[in-house]
Length: 381
Image (tube, rainbow, N blue to C red):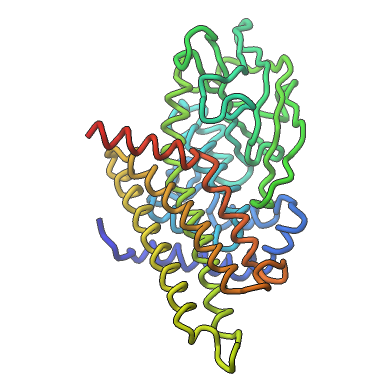
């Protein structure tokens, strides 16, 4: 694996970083306070090609490699953790479901619109009693002529209240366990019975609406089935595996933001007639923060490299997501400590980084589940 960025990768990093510094960072506190979906920023990102980074140009994607996509998402998340989740859920989950498992007609109709930013995507898997235990879902899709009738509900759906295209998982054979789950494309504006019950008031990740969805006798045509009936469980696992690389990227971006802010503050804040950055205790904190962020970044790129080579990367993606999410919280915590009392106030962004970082340890595979995955992969080697 090469550790030097290509010219294209540097250009992607610099282009996204410039956009983030000019457009996102100045708005980050406002987004956090209002918790409103920043549609205008999403539109600007679409104009820059950031809503379909890893997908081929034939579907109006940017055609970037997975390293470049991770770099771009890292920069976006450096500006706003919530905006990072918007892009990750849209691209890594909804977009990737269509790219990997959709037929050509589905890709042309739905993936293309996601890549251009004309549509926003969401991934509806989790339920009240079916988070890590996917087969416990109760949402059902029953055959009805040349389509399906869906009844049930989903929780914790990022972008769920603003999505134009939702990839939905439901049981088509309730007695077949994980082999009875299928995946579908749902169009909220077209499909009667699609109901947004509300959105969550979360600790962090503001600006990305996390919705509760309900389906009341929602009929969808059979040409919205992704793959074959019974493929849904495999679809979910494969999609989440790739998505973990981008949650690692989100985590690295937040860690970098926390480090940059702490370093700047330490160089300006004076105690005992000296900048606190002169004290060894602060220097050691900054050194540890930087080392952890760098290590997480390398794990992220190792997993991305394996994915690009079409090699098995289940363990590496789990390790990248596990480590990056935990160090993001640790780095953000140290950032608050360096700020002292100011770090506990909303006058500085240090506390926001901590709130945004915490989510990465929970969604798309909790740290506990990821440790199980890593151990299972290790013992099978």
